[in-house]
Amino acid sequence: MIQPLEFPICILAFAILLGSCNKSHVKTSRSEGIASGYYNEQYRPQFHFSPEAHWMNDPNGLVYFDGEYHLFYQYYPDSSVWGPMHWGHAVSPDLIHWKHLPVALYPDSLGYIFSGSAVIDLTNAAGFGSDEKPPMVAIFTYHNPILEKSGSNVFQNQGIAFSLDKGRTWTKYSGNPVLKNPGIRDFRDPKMFWHAQTKKWEIIMAVNDRVHIYSSSNMKEWNLESEFGMGIGAHGGVWECPDLFPLKVEGTDIIKWVMLVSINPGEPNSGSATQYFTGEFDGHKFIPDNSNIRWIDWGRDDYAGVTWSNIPGRDGRRLFIGWMSNWEYATVVPTTVWRNAATIPRELSLIAENGNYILISKPVRELTKLRSESDTVSIKSQSFTGEKEISTGEISLMQSELLFDFKFLDTRVDSLGIILENGLKERFITGYSAAQKQFYIDRRVSGNSGFSKNFATISKAPYFAGTDLKLHMFVDASSVELFVDDGRLVMTSLVFPTEKFTRLILFSKNGNVILNKAEFHGIERIWP
Image (cartoon, rainbow, N blue to C red; front, side):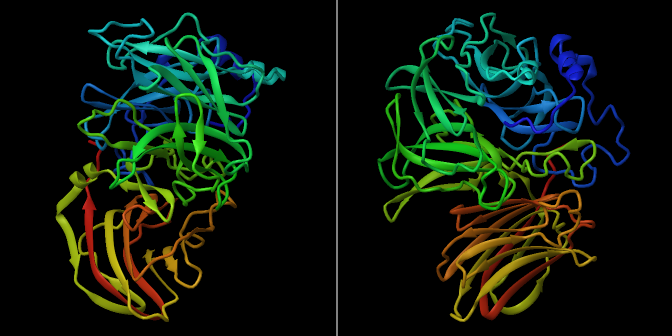
């Protein structure tokens, strides 16, 4: 993750040399007595993860253990703007309902705690636990702002910590850092994983505008295996928060490796985004299938996403979550007690198509638990042209799941789409242009946008739709996540309407479109 702001050296020194943000300094929204109620502030997500209070960015340390999904995340517990980074912590039994836990990792004399990952050391390779009590081990970037301020290039190094009580308390390794900076300014975000064929732990980490891959037998001593990225992929900014994992291609016995790499700036619609590559990996070197630039999410607001480790074999899914914001405006979005949230969790899969391997993202099935049985509306087949308002009954659009199945019968149709509108005529528009073969999200007149000149924009994504088109949307207080044709295309977008959207309008231009069916669900909030 990139440090977006520069703090006075006295604050930096205080944070590092005097213990950095004592536990007694941490406040929550409960203790601050929010007048509007717990998790009920304007724009507060109701079924996405967000911290009780203060600043959040990259998800870190995603690991499953003993019935719990762990979500660690970049966190500053003393302000709703970026500051000395800690690891916040929450756990969930189902990826949906989250319990907040105390801060897991605090800055120390080696620096702030930047992004990293966590695993379960089942063979006790690092020697922190035992075969009977395997430790949870985290690897993370130490970011030393005093060295950075002095002009040094070696201010980012990798450290490890372990927990023997399911991540509730942590002990940092006395020999930190375990991977020292060789003299490279951007040297961070290690994602650790076990490679069964070589029987070694591996990390992939961001190094300037590429990644390095290291291996280790004990998590304490690391050897450089290879690097990847020179002249391949998007290079509009530094590379960050990589991930590397195998996926079976659906309907085949083929196993491909998928590499995720976030980049900031350099996103096709401006700002932050995450690209992906498919290829082969032998524990030493990643060989890409091609050099095409591909994005896991074409919206403006899905960044730094990584996947969970240690998912049981009986489940077998590759589960992903991202930071739902963009560094172009993340520090100034119009929230109060807290700032920023995570995307909904997603299942990743691979399909083969025209000689390419395409990464698919679908909402995790657990989200169906949140559908309100009393708030469900089904819409029968009908045709429309121009604008047509559709009733959603008693469902609140600002806390909803919307599914549409369209069919193009009129070849003259230029575009179709969905409008969310409020009484002030503010509009959030999702559309598909058949003429330009692209999806777009238009939030130019969607409400509150004066906080940044970069917010009120149109985002575009290339896509060729056939005669049938399926759209799946999740709307939650200040965000819309769009999944097209079962996750072949994804666009995530923040939105801050002055008033809540209350009208759902379909539109088509230059011809009739058939709405085969639609289904709308009210979504229960996940907070007590």
